[in-house]
Image 1: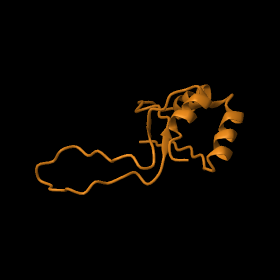
Image 2: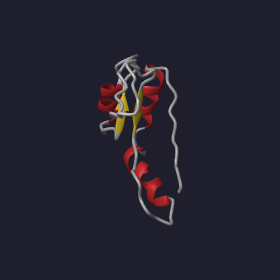
Image 3: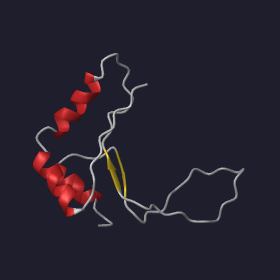
Image 4: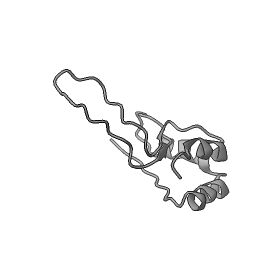
Length: 95
């Protein structure tokens, strides 16, 4: 499915922090040092939920951010996974 980010948002009942659809034009910031007339398109669809940068010494702070939002969404996540034949990934980045 090419245009599914809005449907994923509706199924989960929460908005993404970043999303794009396969086929969307990749918009790059203007750079006078680069001459590029080629238009590039997204090769995949993504729906992302991020806690953003949070300074903390306890990784549970970020973990609970996601658990609070997704804990009761197992059925919806399984629907998304099967309907769009996709994989679901969870990443936690510690700096």
